[in-house]
Length: 139
Image 1 (cartoon, rainbow, N blue to C red):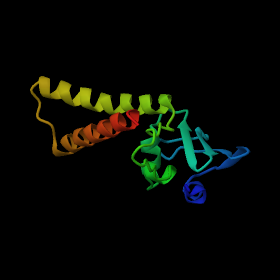
Image 2 (cartoon, rainbow, N blue to C red):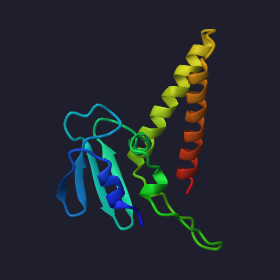
Image 3 (cartoon, one colour):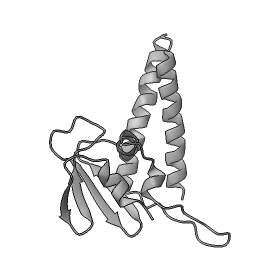
Image 4 (cartoon, one colour):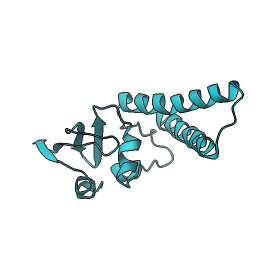
């Protein structure tokens, strides 16, 4: 089961908005008023930042991972594949952000610029995250 209290304890200006629903300041950007919605559904935590932050950016800003939001998914041989529980809009926003990193890096390389070590590591991270997103889409 996802650890609800662990998440809420890491957020600022948390306010309950309904049964298993909250709003808080997004830790991934300079949020002056709460824009992060939190919803608890079964054994998972769903997040959405109306400021446009990717879910991965939100959870990493507070020292968590996506796996902290969702329990391990077990798929025994012979059963149907488990479908993704991440909303398609969140997954697409995440993919768009990481693809932008790749596009900017490619533009620099095409222009003949050498990527700094930091930029190269960020490009590598974008690649890894995009690979993960593809795997998530194929569940």
